[in-house]
Image 1 (cartoon, rainbow, N blue to C red):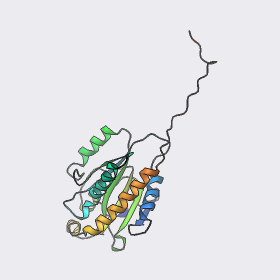
Image 2 (image 1 turned 90 degrees about the horizontal axis):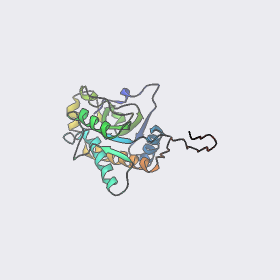
Image 3 (image 1 turned 30 degrees about the vertical axis):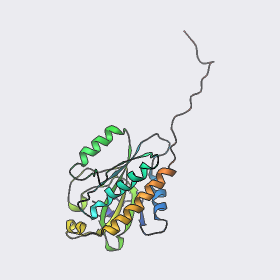
Image 4 (image 1 turned 120 degrees about the vertical axis):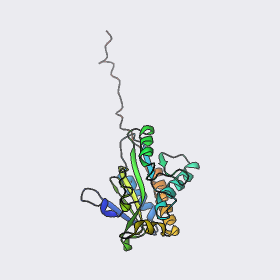
Amino acid sequence: MNLNSSLFNNNKNRLSRILHEDTDASKQISQELINLLPTGKLQPIVIVCIGTDRSTGDSLGPLVGTLLSEKAENSSSSFHVYGTLDDPIHAMNLQEKLNEIKKLHANAFIVGIDACLGKMKSVGIVQIGQGPVKPGAGVNKDLPSVGNAHITGIVNVSGFMEFMVLQNTRLNLVLKMAKTIAEGIYEAQNLYPIKPSITPFTWSFKQEKTL
């Protein structure tokens, strides 16, 4: 779980903010995500969903992972998804899971998904931007940063007794946000163009000589 958007918002990185209730929210998420993904490379895309179902507010990540995994069962998936309700990625196993992912997917482009606390007027906003997500920042935990890009959902208000705030976050809001984020990622997966960076090799018999 993150604290707020100030962890990512700087002049170098563009941060998009999308209200999860917008009629085209999932489409906006898919387009913003596609703009962040690498082009011209055969690079694995890995979605790392962080959080735990032991805390309502912090369950956004594993809910997104579960919804994506269920979609993948009914279609071919080009994105690799880690972190579900059944097998969550949280503070206790984060480094171990990241090590496993790096072994399985060399040179992967990782998108970190996590819940976030922010201002009252920002609750319900989905943030998408370059750079890693910093799990645990909102509750003063020192954990590894995750991702080349991030998607965070502001699920409640920061500033006071964050653990209690997360425990008392409405599941209805978190589930709606998770569905919107998962749909956006799924749409991005279907639209994402994979363009190999291999230059075609042309044989030239005039240049070839046998010795």
